[in-house]
Image (cartoon, rainbow, N blue to C red; front, side, top):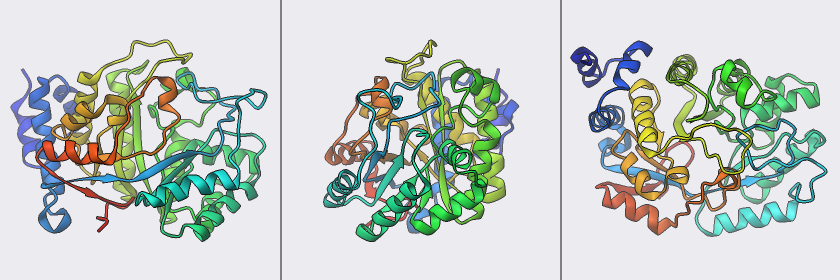
Length: 359
């Protein structure tokens, strides 16, 4: 029987160990959800002038994939193309500007800018793109370039990661997404994405970015070849880095989407998604925010996730091209998001990347 001592520790606001998290994982799902909701209430109690437990936030942004050309061939990805493929592309200035203009017209405040590991794009391509967005759309934050991309840039441009991040920041980069985290255990990464940066390199990019004054999000893509202990090691490494830097704004997890991918693994469903989100909310006691992943789970489970530790409904996501290629086809309007949040008993409020409310 699960030790009541661990439940009491969480209820009292205490930090749990990996061994204790492993025990909590086996709680009945409703009990684990209630414990995660209590942790959320502890963490958000004083936010937004004391209204943190009454509000659920959301973001209006757009995912823009500037290229689908990639040379790391992740086994879980159905988005990438080689340079020789007929549908390979690199976005030009006009297409990029049109996409951002549509976002601004809807009241959006951020673009999530990510692409494949293109072997031939120059440093000037990226710096000019950032500078142009800052000049034409100064109200839009560029949340861009995941740690694997920065490691790719370091190899292609033959420059240290720190220098590249500093140059990108000077050109207009505002924050860094947590993409490419998958599972931060090298034995797992060797099985699912052997040509991508390893766990230490991913964490080094994030620590460097935080030292340079850029915030970032953190992610976990699970439900493929990893074990529970691998997931817990992933969470431990995120928590340890957050203790050192305080630079992560939020944690987002989602389940492996398998359609059309090379990776053959038994996928998991919404039950396991809710269990892991709840456990992550309890374990990551130094993360201020947890996002629900309605993009992979659908609106109904996204709404339930608000009772399993999430305080944010994620993004309207005007455009999403990566996980949708692997079978996640859920879509949502702004009205849908607001309705689901209200139906769960909260007030919906738009926020920016730093979780400041947008009036």
